[in-house]
Image (cartoon, rainbow, N blue to C red):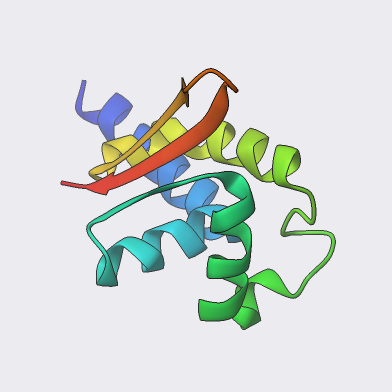
Length: 103
């Protein structure tokens, strides 16, 4: 079990370090413990706060739906780091909200 835990930790570390979306969320939660909004709101917030991470057009998604997909992919390693991402729809229009909470 110790080997398994060590391998998973190494894998999580690699997944986060090699993903600009995961790094941006990790740094974002250092300063802000809770955030809620749409991907349309989150994208410019991350781009404004972390230009070095988000300037690469091949690494950081330019479209909101791609950002949401990238967040869903890094959700498990971030959860193990104490960052909860949740996705839900609200209202009659079905607005898609993202909640980011650091525990």
